[in-house]
Amino acid sequence: MRHKSKDTSLTTRYRSPSLRLPWWDYSQAGWHVITICTQDRQCPLGDVVEGSMVLTPAGQIVEEESQRTVTVRHNISLDEFVVMPNVFLGGLGFS
Image (cartoon, rainbow, N blue to C red):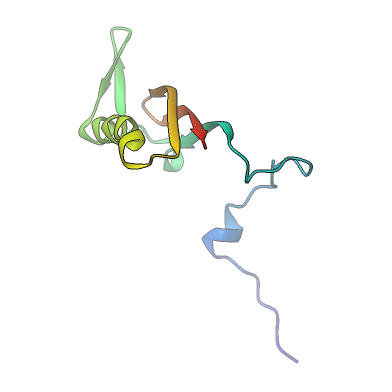
């Protein structure tokens, strides 16, 4: 009999319960709100200075690649998005 070990890989360690709707067909076209948080909530993407977001070089890459995604991925539409110090939020349409 094989001994079961506790799986501590990243796929299980940081896995939260699925928020997918069981009745929704995710293979169909539609709009999704994407939220990506940085590791440990660090702020590598920029800082708020006098009420305005000032992007770091990493934050500039995130912004540029977000805008570029619609030209290199023809099945994706980009609605509004925002790069914050430790979060990217965006509306993506998949066709």
